[in-house]
Length: 243
Image (cartoon, rainbow, N blue to C red; front, side, top):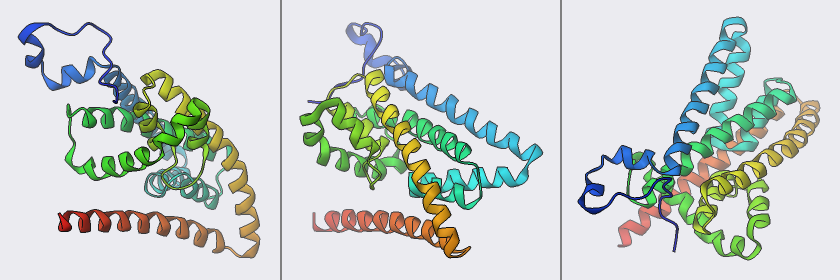
């Protein structure tokens, strides 16, 4: 059985509880506070990127496209794109840490709200279902190894083994929000540090083969991500048709 919303205060008694507005019920839970922090962090990140435009439009463009690439294609695509734009390694690493931080802080509480049928965001339902399916398929393995297993799972660079799925697995195995996010984000930062150095060396090696080779590499990662999305959507559509 999966945990319900974790509330800081005692539940209201009698008939008053159902009368509370949905947003108040959401914000009274620990996940609601996580969502607020995630929104603030995302806003701060976007403001920081926006400010770079005042003194360096080129840097603004590089950071913006790297952020978009990361969100669409994952960590490897985002970091590789940063190196293609000749950004310093520390900029690529810190920016991608920030991106994955606010993605986790936003996605995790929204998933919990959706799972508990408190708040349902229809455009995100397919994404929620996809991540839930991936989390459930790995849940038993992670339970076998506990927190170290979850940490390693988040670190692993393959598709559907990142922090978003990891945070959902942490929820399924009963970790409280702070412990769950602590483990997931620690694994995420460690992964970004490791892969930041590896991808930088890979980019340097590919660049020697030709200017467009690193771009082709990033394009391949994005194409792989898109193909997985299309395959999953086709599978879901076929399943619904059979039903």
